[in-house]
Amino acid sequence: MVIELSFIWAGIIAFAVLTYVILDGFDLGVGILFPLARNETEKATMMNSIAPIWDGNETWLVLGGGGLFAVFPLAYAVVMPALYIPIILMLLALIFRGVAFEYRWRTERWKPVWDAGFFGGSLIAAFMQGIALGALVQGIEVTDRAYSGGWWDWLSLFSVLTGFAVVIGYALLGATWINLKTEHRLQAQMQRYAVFLGIGTLGFMGVVSLLTPFQNPDYFQRWFNLPGSAFSVIVPGCVLLMAWLLFSSLKAGKDATPFFASLGLFVLCFIGIGISFYPNIVPPSLTIVEAAAPDSSLKFALVGTVVLVPLILAYTAYAYWVFRGKVDPEEGYH
Picture 1: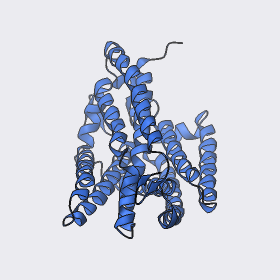
Picture 2 (picture 1 turned 45 degrees about the vertical axis):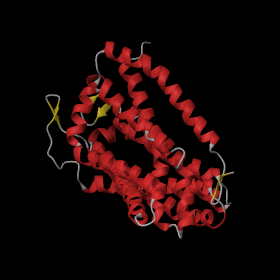
Picture 3 (picture 1 turned 90 degrees about the vertical axis):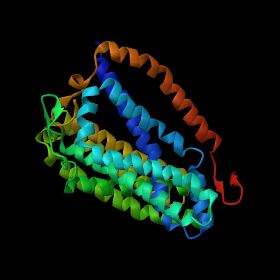
């Protein structure tokens, strides 16, 4: 059986987006939790925990966005006009956050301003990502292969709900990451926060999951008719397993398990979105095949991607390996 190149590329784009979410999600979460640090030592420790890897995490955002433009130009041409405002606000927030990250170490007088920028950039970027996700789940109006909706269609109660859900979820990732990378009082503090954030994340997951089928009749069909109905049992069961791992490991004071359990929740959410969307790339009507570039373009781009993606994975893994271990407030990593 020959697999459509467009489906191979859809898998690559989905992988890039998921990798971005789980990697950049926790360092955005650190920024969201930043105001809760009790003193400058804790702030420095939190920032040092992501300092070696935060900018590399955003490589996957470039790969996902650039890949969408190159291999699904129609989807890109539809999504961008529909989501101009949240995407531009997200990018501006990420830029300002990056500037604040670098500049706060070089000043004392303006350090509170850059601290606020680091927090605000992280919060806005996370919230806008959630808004964009909610707008996609709602569906984007397409007429004659072009966006035909209104300027503010992306803004709704559902998209705002998903915005808050992503903020709380990223904060959970941030709390479990800091739990993994720190010791003593800061670690204990984040373990407490992670319990409440875990409850909040699961609550938002439940509400969004219940509301999603009402956004589009096709979602009902995919989830509640065979073979999709099997996933209606499997996915919630896996969510319960990840929730148990999260809370039991936090109670036991473990370092790594809460973080990986939190990542598991995000992976399951992503799988759920994929089940809802398939075979569309832009719901409710633009399919993966319709949105794809010609096969010659897909083949050409695939050659470079097959080489580059393993390289990106390799240097990302190497960076995490080099900076493994706990962050010492006085000396860095140990």
